[in-house]
Image (cartoon, rainbow, N blue to C red; front, side, top):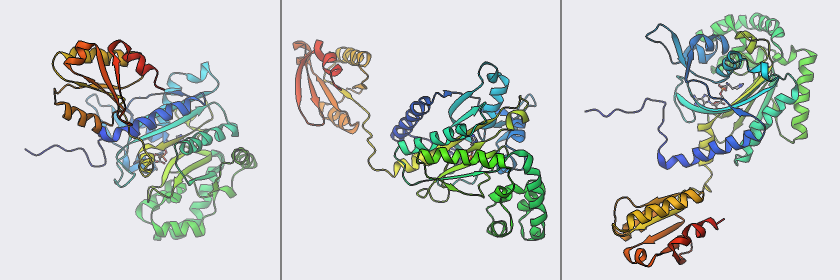
Length: 420
Ligand code: HAM
């Protein structure tokens, strides 16, 4: 019979590779909680209309990448391709703005986009990110950027490139789109079918075009949105930059950074790495002051970012200094009499310390058990044979320096509690 395999663009994370993921996840929780953010978890699927209205009908995500279906009850559903729209939905539905003028949330979650799989690009992938509701002040944009940049730095990623831009408020968007349409319609014949549609429906998306011809035309002929934004928008942007300057966070002002989703207003930013290849964006985000209202809530300013965890793991794997030691104690058991005693000792150590403990459950020879302890990179072995049980003493071997101690069974927990 044919073996069933995973779907293209998805990946199993096997036990040998999980260490980095768990370490990354725990660092994300600790780092972001220190900024006073609370975790939010939303369902894996939502009504399709949420993404159509929230992310935008003319975006690549909604146009060609969503996993959507109609369920048996006739509901149109979509596996979430991003998390901003679901978090906004939850914010409105549960009236979070009522009890608190400022809501700061973060998430770690799986997303689904039917993109062409390649290094750093999957059809199911993981993001962590933050969304903040309630403040339209530039220090809130700066705080979000500081979290993203400083977190990536704190886990050892080097040569990060922060690109930042402002695309102004929604009110100037219409005028700018008209200008773009007028200017670029002369070149419509040179555009691909999809870029022609973009020109008609949402010309801002032309800045995301992958077609070299279109890119060249846009680079040469299109004015950037920065030339059209208001004095207020410029002042907001300058204030964000001045905070980044104070914190010595380096950035590049990329006037073409409009981002591929429709909800952004004012600040947009991305953090990239040269070590990733074609899919070089680790993180993207920005302000989206109109989205809450657009999805039926009371007007509420908001800003956030999301970072791709597969891309972060790719970068961490390039760092050879990763310490994969994961087991503290392996208990070697020799003879059936030793099994209950060994399992009781393991239980006592686990309950009274923070250490990981494994006991032998395959009744292997002493040599085979020692080999297993080495394979698991155990830091200590406790050796228990029939003689040890009778004498109520065991041998504890430090696997790093080979030093052995003979210790009474009663003293074992004490021994391990005193380790730093
Ligand atoms: P995004 O730019 O679509 O933004 O995604 C953010 C990050 O997720 C990307 O920079 C990338 O690292 C990662 N990513 C995206 N697609 C894939 C994929 N197919 N495979 C692997 N990684 C991927 C958003 O999703 C916005 N919701 C960000 C945001 C939050 N803006 C405001 N708040």
